[in-house]
Length: 222
Image 1 (tube, one colour):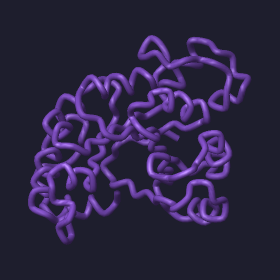
Image 2 (tube, rainbow, N blue to C red; image 1 turned 180 degrees about the vertical axis):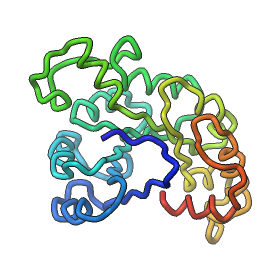
Image 3 (cartoon, rainbow, N blue to C red; image 1 turned 90 degrees about the vertical axis):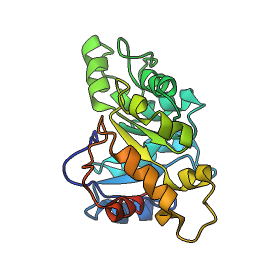
């Protein structure tokens, strides 16, 4: 199921291990909007297990953070495994955002390779309709985690094919040099960046009138 920004805040859950069946069984029975599968910071999780993980989750939407923006082939592998909602970390400019969109979409919207795999049950005819429908079902989220990304936030958010932008507060705090501060989530520099980027209302559907503490609350959903 494709995830897109809505007027209602989506609340997801991040399991400590995306390959633990008992944990996934518990989480999918709870009223979360989605299950966040973090393949970037999960050590030793082999991509070939992802189809089984997605199958175990069933109808609960999943959000898959791929292991690194520099491995664009990982986008292909994750999508071929059946994922529909991607989060790509460390996007710093419009060119990088455009590259991940291209990797995630079949022609004419991108250059994703096309073959029979889990995404089409190994049997759906590879017609223009099938690939067009697949493009419609994939959402692409990009993660801003550095001051370079913050500087280019408007261009990143406005990149065709980017459905939403996620702010990575931990790496933002590191980029700002305040990671060692107590409760760095609430540090004034982090809050300032969140508010500045939050006011870029191109794709980031937030109200610039929100209180500062609302941005801090949003941080704790990371």
